[in-house]
Length: 276
Image (cartoon, rainbow, N blue to C red; front, side):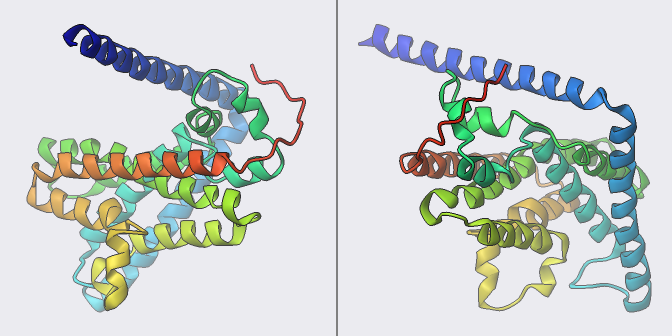
C-alpha cells in the first residue's frame, strides 16, 4: 500500500515536471519566433507602452481635478494599472492562444493538438505568444519604478502576485472561449466576458457598488486581480499571498475542466496540419 502511494506521488511529480519543461520549451520557441522579426516586435512593444501611458496621463489629469476616484489616489490607480497590465501581459506571453481558442476549435484546428501526447488544453494555450503583450508586461515594472516609497518588500509583493494574476486572466479568458463547445459561435459572449474582466479590474473598487459587486469576487474575479492585490501591497499582508495563489489555481483547474467537458462535444475538422 505504501509502495503504491509512493509510485503515485512519483508519477505526479514526474508529470508536473514534464509539463513545466514543456512550457519552458514552448516559451523559448515562441520567443525565438518573435525575435525573428525584431522591427515588428519593437513597434508593437513600444506601441502598447505608449497606449498605456496615455491612460496614465488621463488619470493624472482626472485625479488632479477631483482629488480621488472611488477612494483611490493617483498612486493607487497607477499601481492597479501597472499590476493588471503586467499580469495581463504575462498571461498572453505564456498562453498566447487564450483568446483564440474558440476560433481554433470552430475551424477544426484542435485536431493537431489532440494527436500530440501533451495535454491538449495546455499545449494549445502555450503554442503561441502575443508580441504586444511584452509591452504590457514591462509597463507594470516601469510604473513600480516611478511610484514613490517602493522598497524591497513591496517589490517582492508585486512579483509574488504576478503569477496568480496571470493565471486568473488565463482561466477566465480560456473558460469564456470554451463556451464555443456548448454554444457554437460564442465569440460575442467570450469577448464581452474578457472585456468585462479587464475593464472592471482597471477601475477603483469604490465605483463598483450595488448587488453586482459579488460578481467581481466570483464569475468575473476582478477583485482577485486588482482590488485584493492593492490591499496586500498597501498593508504588506503576506498571509493573503498564498490565499490568492490558491484561488488562482482553483480557477485555472475549473477552466481546464470546462475545456475537457467541452472537448467531448468537439467534432474533428479533418485538418491535415502538422505542428513541430
